[in-house]
Image (cartoon, rainbow, N blue to C red; front, side):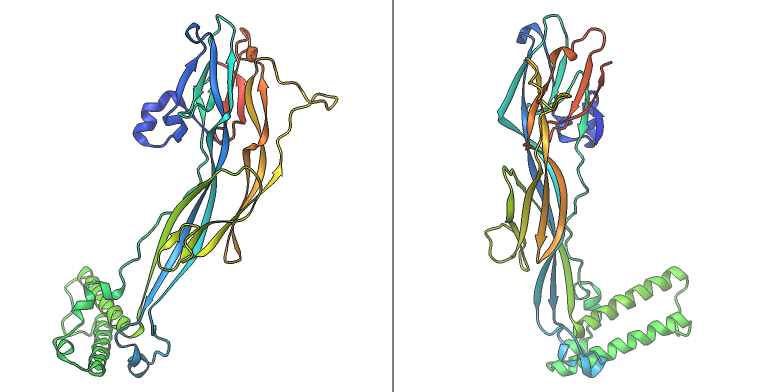
Length: 362
């Protein structure tokens, strides 16, 4: 977990590098105006699941029936098909204020502790402007399909006037094959330096070779067909309150990509959650639970859950995540923040309400 200074909010907002909680943090001080009391809300932990799907569209070329005859290719694309699969699933957590866990702590008159709060009134830190920066994993980015060879300018360059005028598919296929072999011969002559008119320099030669390659791919696509691949990305959020067994959170459609769980056009993506550890109250040397400190500063001791995401029989994510709702609430003595000799500071996890760091306040 990284930490950032909440004093640098202006810079963070300008650069966009700070966590969302830091960008919207406010400072709440214990003063006479609020009777030296600070009110805050502990979080529940939500799950964010980002899915990346790959959609593949295959289309036959105009001359697929002649691929074997002219190019000796026995497996051209013969019909249009759409297919889809899940490429990745990324699980992360976030905090949402739990209205059932609202607290107020009152400090002694004459002291000056302060608390940094998120926009949702979730505590970020006490007696420091340092705050946890959310450990956001790298998320996939959606990509449109690249143009196929038949969608490039080269596709029009290779169509001769004779091909345009011919009403016979067989004749057009023959002409296309002849043009393909002529292109290959021209490229071979250029590479070997045997062309009648060689380009003046290496850059011109490369441009000519690149254009010939694009034209060759366009002619080949007329026989073997085209394949276009795009990726879709979508994020789904939920707030679990118990174990989850194979819940359908989304579907992958070969036509529409990532769709909602109720859209039966796609194959289901399943999420499971199993609580692996419940948060426990701290105990003394005799193993007895410690009582909640009087007027204590409440924080969460989270539990843990195993989260898995599956699709088509394969597991795409299997992670352990700390979660506030499977934990317990304990407290810190308020005088530890106002001790004249050795006051402390604390940094909290805004997703779970847990203590991430504490030490002597400056």
